[in-house]
Amino acid sequence: MRVTILAIGSRGDVQPMLALGLALGARGHEVRVAALDPFAELVRERGLDFASLGPLPAGFTRRIGPLRVPEFTGVIGRALFWAVYGRLLERRLAALAGASEGADALVFGGLAFPAAFLAEARNIPCYWASPTPHTATAEFADPFFAEGRWASATAAIRRRTYGIEASLRSLGCAGVLARLRRALGLPTVPIHRLAGHLEETLTGVLYAASRHLLERPREWPEKVQITGAFDLPPAPGWTPPPAIAAFLAAGPRPIYVGFGTMNERDPARLGRLALDALARVGGRGILGGLGLTGAALPPWALAVDDVPHAWLFEEIALAVHHGGAGTCAAAARAGIPSVVAPQAYDQFFWAERMHRRGVAGPPLPHRELRAERLAAAIRAGLESGPQRAAARALRAAVLAEDGATTAASTIARDLRRGSASVQEALP
Image (cartoon, rainbow, N blue to C red; front, side):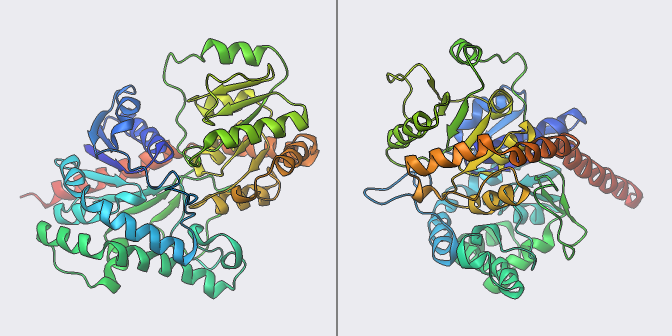
């Protein structure tokens, strides 16, 4: 069977979908991964077919002029996000449709949600795969509403946040989706029904997170599954750069500091802040993507650009990061404590989940980062026996999961059932 995986977003969005693609390929399926242009090599080096969804838009991941990066959380943030994204989406529709041509099933990440209507028009199975849950529950607020008063609201209000997020998505993208449905020959769906209709068309929802960080709410429907994280190991034959290997061998396990693609306009400012904090702690540090590559650094610090977390986190004592779902999963798998400094999107949700599990201290919001506060949080994580014990326990639990294999098995099972049904219907 031919399966197309549609992943719009940064590396953190593409990498887990690539892990799923490899698991599907191992079951004999023909897999195509459609992503933004910067990830073509990442996909092709794993032996999977790549389809371009265009260039990576810069506005979501850096400051614009004197403004800081929008957090895109809460009502105002989500309304802003979907208003901007609705305009960007129009330019992706042709690529989404082209990449999915000839597929027997579609799998999409959240930003590629028009795939559900492409699958509807072609009458093929469709799956929403995401590390972050957006199925309504009263047990916790939608992860994009996980900061401040929303997270501590009543059960009824927490449940309502899912409807708010879905409504803002529909409002921001209504015109684009209406034109898409007309082009596909599908009936018109009123704006207030768009979100519900999309959910109804899905064959399944696959949440690529550990059940030890995300407990399954009782009221979720049967087709919603928590599979475990989609972990992508380093490419076969990959070896660490000599400078990193030498640095690791030269002393005790270092501390990692990196904030993914959510760095601000002046990432070197964060680099200087990280160096100041590490100097206060007296620890060795690896600084990831903080604008310091090639800069003169003290002998106890090393700047790196792109190193697989799956490998690096096994070699360090503690990780300071932004709380992205994939980074949290890598830290959990490595069994190390974290200092989580959330900035935007669902990062506040995962920061709180890591804290509740006991593998990180209280979230340290990115906007409140100061060298002295970061140093204190690092010191607390290094010296906390309970945190280290909780991290080891979480590692053991997470290693027993294989999210990509579980999700691939679910999709393969449904494809076999669908194929059998077609055969039975033939004369």
